[in-house]
Length: 282
Length: 273
Ligand SMILES: Nc1ncnc2c1ncn2[C@@H]1O[C@H](COP(=O)(O)OP(=O)(O)OP(=O)(O)O)[C@@H](O)[C@H]1O
Ligand SMILES: [Mg+2]
Image 1 (tube, rainbow over the protein chains, first blue to last red):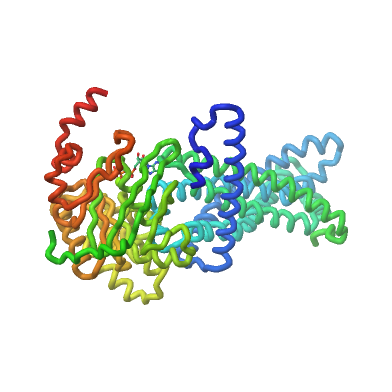
Image 2 (image 1 turned 90 degrees about the vertical axis):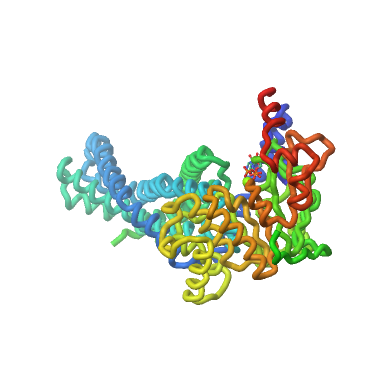
C-alpha cells in the first residue's frame, strides 16, 4: 500500500514539485525505516540470545581478522604523525615535546577513527555485501519462512561483535601507533626517549583514553547498523550488492566523522564542567 | 492422478488471495489475482517464465506484501495477525525456493535442522534422525550433510533445500520449480516425494513447475497465469483453472500451446516485434 503511494518510479518525478514531494517522502521513509530497523535490533538484543555457533565465527571475522590491517595502518599513522609534527615543533624549538603531540592525537582522535575506518572498510562493506547477497538469493526470505526474524538473526550478532570488539581494536591501534611513533622519534629523529615518554605522560589524561574508547563504541554501533541496513535494502543483482557495499562504507564513514565531531565537542564540554577529570594518567 | 488423493475441503480455503496486485517499481506483475488454496489439494501453477508465479507463491506465504488486496490464512487476514501468531502459523508452511536459498554460511546439516533448532526444543539426536531421514528421502548421501552448499551441484543443492523445507513436517508445502535442473530419474523421485508427502499426512501442496510430467502426475488442480504485459485490459490474469486433463484439451490457444510446448504463435509474435 505504502509503495504505491510513494511513487517509486522515475516517471512520477516529472515536475520540480513532484520531485520535491518524492524527495521528501523518500527521506521520511528512509528515516522511519532506519528507526524501525534499529528498534528491531534493540528488541532482539534485549530478548534473545544468539547461539554461540552463530556468534563465534562473526566475532572471529570481525575481531581477529581485523588485527593485521589495524596493526599495519596504526603503525604507519604513528610514524606519519611523528614525521609531520617534528618539523613544525623543531621550528619553534619544542621538538622534545613530540611525544605529547603524537600520543594525544592518537588516543583522542586517530586511534578511534582509524579503527572505525578499517572496520567500515573491511567489515562494514563485507557485511553489507553478505546480507545483500542473502537478500538477492532469497536467503532472507528463507530465514523468515523458517521462523527466524531475519533482522534479529543477522544483525544482532554483528552489532554485538562490532560494539564489543571495536574498543579493543582502538586500543590496539593506539598502542601500535605509540610504539611506532616512539621508535621513529627516538631512532630516526633523535629525540630523547625519556623526554618523549615524560611529555606524553604529562599531557595525556585518563579522560582522553576513555573518551577515545567511548567514541569507538558509538562508531562500531553505527557501522554495524548502517552496513546491515544497506544490505537489507540491496537491489537485485550483483550490481545491487556492489552498490550496497559501497554505500555501507560511504554512509558509515560520514556518520563516523559526524559523530566524532559531536562527541569530541561533548567531551571537551565535559572536561570544562568537571575539571577533576583532567587528572594525568599515572 | 494418485489414488491417495484426499478430496479437497471446498468449504474453507486454507490460503486465499483476494484481489491481490503487486508490482516492482513501475512494473506491474500481478493484477487483481483471486486464488483459493483448499486443504488437501495439490495446486499446480503454470505459466510463462516471468509471468509472476514465484511472486504469487511469495504472496501466498506472506513473504511479500501485495500492493493492494488481501491475503487470508485460514480465513484470517494476514495483515491483522500479530507477529507472534504469524511466526507460529508460518511454521506450518514449508517453502522450497526456486534457487534453493540454502544458507551459505551453514553446512547442509545445519541448513536442514535450521527450523527445528530455531523453533523447537529438540535434542540433537532427534534432529539428526530427522535430518538424515529427509536427506535420504531426497536422494542425498549422508556424506553430503557435512558439506557446505557451495560444494554441492545445483541439483543436489535444490534437493538439500527440499529436505530443509520438509524437515518441519509442514501442513502446507510450496514447491517453486522442484524438478528444474534435475535429471529425469531424480525428477521422478521428487514427483514421487510430492505424492508421498500427501499420502502420509493431509498436506496441501502448491507446486510451480514448467515440467508437464509433474503436472500430469501430481496436480489435482491446475492454474495458469498469463503475463500481464500481453493480457487484454479486462481479462483475468488467471486464464485457466481446472484439472490437468482439461488443460491438455483446452480450446484456448494460449493454454493449449503452452502445455503442449508449441511455440508457433509466440514465435510469430517475437519475429514480428
Ligand atoms: N524482488 C524483485 N524485484 C524486482 N522485480 C522482481 C522481483 N521479483 C520478481 N520481479 C519481477 O517480477 C516478474 C515476475 O517474476 P517471477 O519470479 O514471479 O516470475 P516466474 O513466473 O516465477 O518466472 P520463472 O518461471 O522464470 O521463475 C519478473 O519480471 C521479475 O523481473
Ligand atoms: Mg519463478
